[in-house]
Length: 174
Image (cartoon, rainbow, N blue to C red):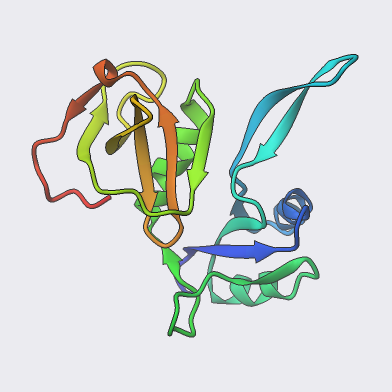
């Protein structure tokens, strides 16, 4: 059996949760980045799951499972970099940091496909994201920490600059 690796899978619009549920039933490890938020209607409030990256779900698969996933009706194709034919592997360390940010952030996480300018490498030292490493950036005068998934873009969460410390060694890749 080949080693499992993380791949980004494109799915039909609004089919992300159905694909997640089907993969889970099949015993295939997957990750759909969602965040709970409260929606306000005129007569009530309701907690809903918001999909962070529309039309995308991450799967951790071996070669056999990779072939099985692509045969599902709502799955379109794997993320492949321009000029390449094989699906692009998402490094496990980047997925771990992204999942940690989503699981432990007290603030809403946003995702930007645009490439952010590299900033100062920082480690969160206080709060629910303590231990998370990323880049400190400033957007509209507010401090935010960004976790880069090189093939896709950056997940960003607002954070006070007092909650982070600068990382002095430069050998840790983002």
